[in-house]
Amino acid sequence: MAADIVNLRQFRKTKARAEREATADQNRLTHGRTKAEKTLTRKLNAQASKRLDQGHIETPDDNQD
Image (tube, rainbow, N blue to C red; front, side, top):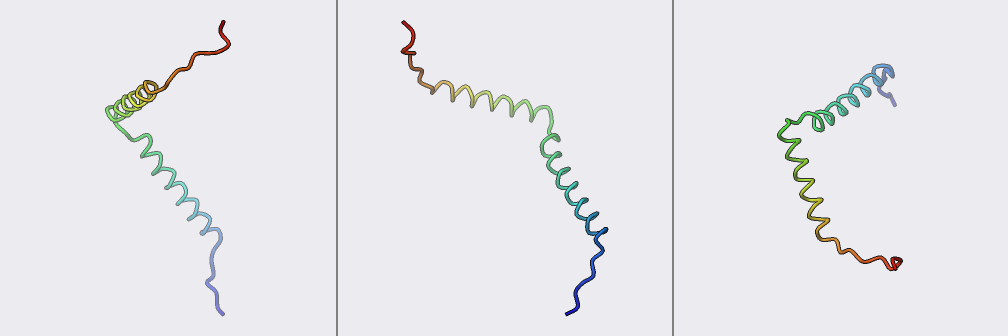
């Protein structure tokens, strides 16, 4: 029936460290790209948006007389 004794202060610090590290990893993925990679992503997004708009069928407004 003996339980492990846990120091709550150390547990909180360890948990906070792990959360900060996870946030840092995500930021490295998001912001740690070269200018060429960022430009390529912007270009691909623009092309996809343009392709999507080209497939859109416009209907005339019935309110215009």
